[in-house]
Length: 478
Image (cartoon, rainbow, N blue to C red; front, side):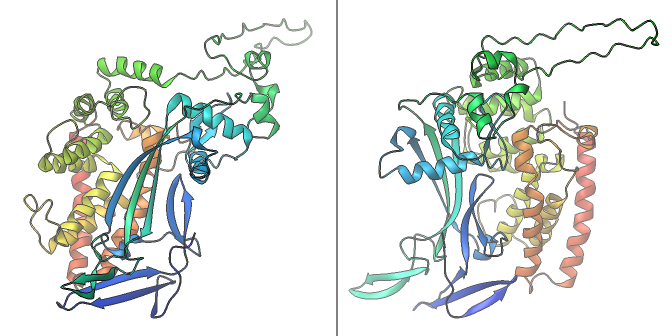
């Protein structure tokens, strides 16, 4: 759907037509509202984002700092036929299909940019999956402010006189950044569960000839409780007397991957965590935060304890999440000094999200954000530091994985704990966005970013990269 149309006063920026509207108030203050022509909302990687007509992603930094509005809601699939909810069901179903794919067992599994086909079979399996796993969907979007309709100001009665005032809902920006987290549930009647034969008939998975015998016997349905794969005994054939003796060729059938329930996976992870495995401790903390699934009740205090244990073993992703817990006071007291400490450590260890966060931190301090003013002084050098951190975040440390689940040889040789599929998918998108913001620092601050400042920034990029390398050598994962 179109967010904004074209209007008068258009200017060209990055090959995209944009419009600015400046409003001057009686007290001398000004509000500049940026409007982007030909913007369309689309689903990408399961998130609702915005792109221009040519397909390039909208740089929302052009808007400045938008007010962030976060909402949580629960959507019960039993309401799909209700006129008020039918549209939402389709919207959430489409987001889900971009995040999950049907595996060879006929079950939904997480996948990035899956683009699973929507049909009656995937729709029915979707209902069963939601009833069992209760997944969350996150939809992020930039929307026009409802109160001012995107203008950044509205008419208000002040001292019995109607005047134009800056919109307080969006702080005069005309737009707000919305984050909607939807907890999916299904308390309604479930349809018959699709069989593997059903998915084969529409070409979603391979033909039945390649499926295990246990599946065929049940008409395509897999009874996970009864499957215990056993390797076939190799048959050794005697070679003909006239032929030279060669080693027997043994054809081993591919063993089906056994799926476990979220609760079983939680129990397995907890056992490893209690044995001291840092990756398992991190994964266990995510279970308690309900970041990975809702296998167990939300417990921020247990999450904090396990995240701290993994962080003290130099687990970069655990340190990234621990910084968030301290920043928001989740499971522990709010402590911005600890947030900065752990996020910086995580960034030095190589976490791309932390590196980008550090760049954003210094950029916001430079702009006058008082949140971390007691820890970092506002100074022109903040812009140099922001540039260096964004540049570090823009570097791709390893070649992309062929399979998101399997780390490549370069990644394994680096010595860090390999990222799980979820973190890999989140980390791999950061370098591109970090590079865009890095370049925007020089583009949007021409008066501040002089030749000397740019030279200082390039020099800082080199020293920061060396500091990070030395830090990783001294703080290897345990």
